[in-house]
Amino acid sequence: MITEEDFEAWRENPVTKSLLGILADMVQDTKNKWDAVAWVGGSADPLLLADLRARAEVLVDMIEISFADMEHKLDKSEQDSTD
Image (cartoon, rainbow, N blue to C red; front, side, top):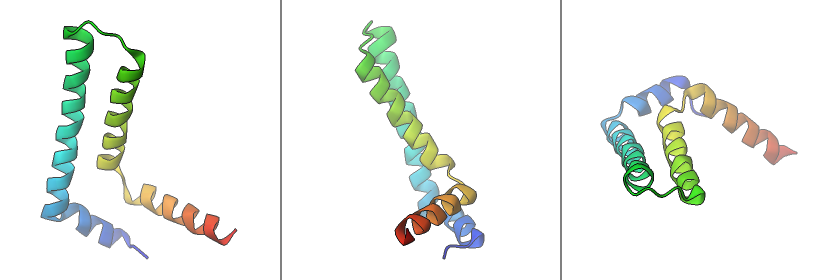
């Protein structure tokens, strides 16, 4: 079982902070690609733009995950495995 203290220690770990920084850079790279394709390139390919938006949203979700989010998902996963 992961405690809130364990989670906070993980968030404060320098490796975790570096990883989250890289993910934030990837969000910005994705937004820059959106701008390059849509604004500069003049393309409005809905599939490409939806893919770029989805990528950015997943990365942001990963960066912003909280202990409560994780705990809820772990509890749900455990319940699903016992059903």
